[in-house]
Amino acid sequence: RLSISPLRKINNTINTYAQAKNREIETLQKNAEFRREFIADISHELKTPIFAAQGYIHTLLDGAVEDKSVRLKFLKRAAKSLNALDKLVQDLLTLNQMESGVIKFNFEAFDLKELIHEVIEELEQKAAKRDVLIRFFYDKGKSYKTIADKDKIFRVCQNLISNAIKYNHDGGEVEVHLKTHKNYILVEVKDNGKGIPPEDLKRIFERFYRVEKSRSREGGGTGLGLAIVKHILEGHKSKISVSSTLGKGSIFSFELPCEKPAKEASLKI
Ligand code: ADP
Image 1 (tube, protein in one colour):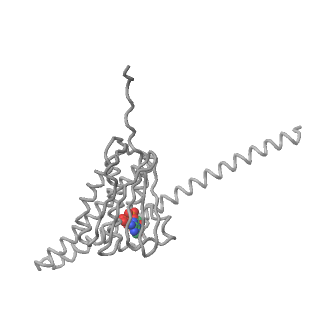
Image 2 (image 1 turned 90 degrees about the horizontal axis):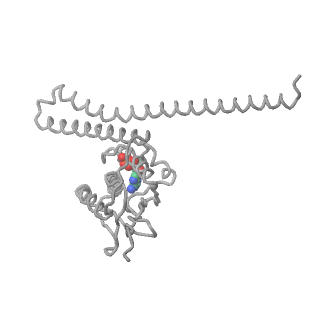
Image 3 (image 1 turned 120 degrees about the horizontal axis):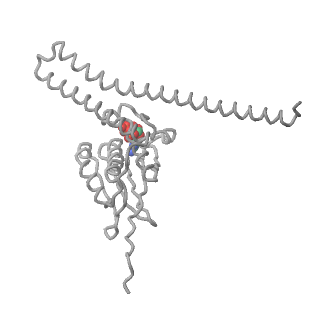
């Protein structure tokens, strides 16, 4: 005959096992739900440019092709939709590779100030179209050398500055600030655009989350940019911060380490 105590032990073991199994089932259910949602989101996002391109091509085939001016306009629009589709697929692949950890980070020393100059140069035309002025502030006497994955940090800066232009009003301003404190370089991207409502602020780093869908798509957005930014910075053990005031603008910022000067290999005697 078993005494009460061993019976209780068996009972406890069974309960613990059942609880662990329940948790496992819950996790599996959550994963399945996440996958379902992800596939639904992707399908929806893919359909938008596909439907648009199909629409233009079918209209051309139905006779619009005879009209020279319409032909060119519709072909250009179809090409624009296909470019958007291509960008979306590229971004999805990048995000997928990052989430599954297969993407490699190539760390090297480079000057963050020079990299930001390059990004601004690339985006100047886009800014000029909206009459947006980009201003870059840093201390000329200071070094902004860091060790990071240069291409990926280029992408981070490109995304933040491009958003600051895209979600600004015509004639608005974008300020990029480089600051050093302790062993870190702080990058700040400020805009005086429309800002982000507080209830959306936490969610803008989620894939496909947009405050205004139409504005994002018009500006060539995939809704994946900030999710990619977040992953890249996590790969650098850094994180993205945001503060925003509705109607006034937003500030996105992140930090990277200063490159430490190499120590003297040996002491001269
Ligand atoms: P998108 O491709 O839509 O620009 P992002 O992931 O880069 O995707 O940004 C997600 C959403 O966050 C955007 O759709 C926009 O609503 C909001 N957002 C991002 N940056 C800004 C900004 N500087 N000002 C206002 N809203 C912004």
